Length: 331
Image 1 (tube, rainbow, N blue to C red):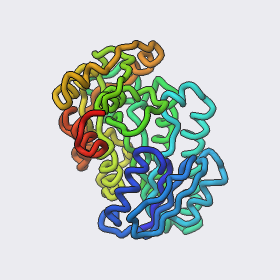
Image 2 (cartoon, rainbow, N blue to C red):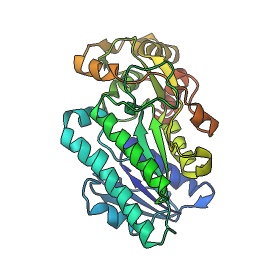
Image 3 (cartoon, rainbow, N blue to C red):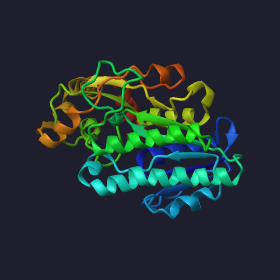
Image 4 (cartoon, rainbow, N blue to C red):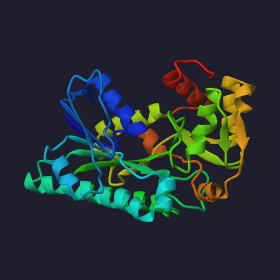
């Protein structure tokens, strides 16, 4: 199996590629090569028993996609994107990367499919987002809820979902779209995502550092760990497309909690000292963005198809401690 990953230097992309190096196979099929693409090179992949190519490139460059598809990868994991906050601030950049870049990739696959006489039909796993939904919401949000995004990022991801379903319907590739919940706790440094505070208020206190909470504790949201996100992708890479049916985009399962419940989970796992490091500092711009986000999902289709996430936010905190902190809490 030849694998292409866009956004390979990002948090989820990096962890997915590391998992490939560890496992050496996807769904029992040995990985023979991995091509990693991002705006910065993803770096080396120690332990990989297959050919690894890491390249710095921008998917908004129309000439890139045909070159990537010339090798006809069997699995294409499309994670590259401009995140929510940045896409809202920089309108042109958001559409260039999140919409045009996705279209270039899908069109390049289509061109190879046509040249092969229909024989080339790879599995495409597309990273979508719960931002494709817009308020007002039912509680919980059912799988058949309409797409009415209230941000530029959500609109761009919704366009990607429509293209994925149509290109799959036409037989150009076999696509699966994953509407990720907010991935928490994200390791590393804060990024430009409006949702970054969900991780910040857990990650920083766990290492003895202060964190800013820009929204009320009543804000409610759905989360899954980076560990779960990688498992979502691996499952999407191997699932029988016939079982999914024509609705190719799925809302992933997760843990639905308020910010206050997040903080309480932190208290139970790491104690009052960690919680005391959270500083309340309202940010009206972030509050406005978050107010338009969905909160809880049924995700019944995804669960029925075998997608699995954590069962509590305490599990999410413990997973971060185990995966990123060597099992230890404190600065």
